[in-house]
Image 1 (cartoon, helix red, strand yellow):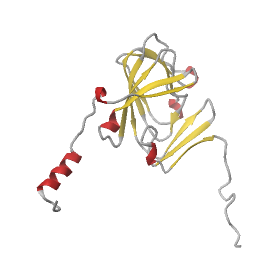
Image 2 (tube, helix red, strand yellow; image 1 turned 60 degrees about the vertical axis):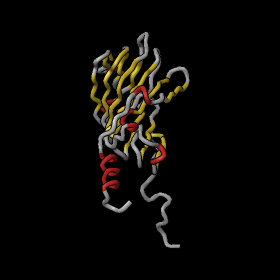
Image 3 (spheres, rainbow, N blue to C red; image 1 turned 90 degrees about the horizontal axis):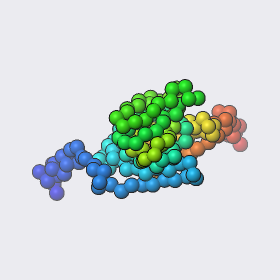
Image 4 (spheres, rainbow, N blue to C red; image 1 turned 45 degrees about the vertical axis):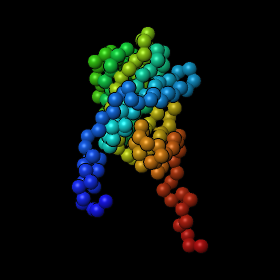
Length: 185
């Protein structure tokens, strides 16, 4: 195909056009850890070609939580509850929020927005989780006093695109010059 030909322009236009994803066309991914954490997820934004905003459909069984208590230093999130009920636990319970259908919760970046979703109802809790997809990001887990570092792809993004990713004790510090070759050999 010659550069700039009508067929090549049509292909470029198709890539740049809006795309849609339909939940019925996507498979659930499932996660469970111990007796406390479980969820099912469909990555809607990724399937539709989203770049800077993520959106996933979550379904959390009764009595479960999808993730440990955390907050992000580099990404804002939001929740929109579709069905079921639960609680969004906040720092020290200071501003816990009841999650019911048609509830929207904004969760800006930073320590003031510590959160954990819990399905404390009798039916599955279904909600949309929306987030900016900034990287690098540091996710802080205050209950376990650790941090997660995500470079190359934001949390919730494509893990194969990550150039650096790991979880570390929050107090695992070294000096800037530690183990650096500061003397000529």
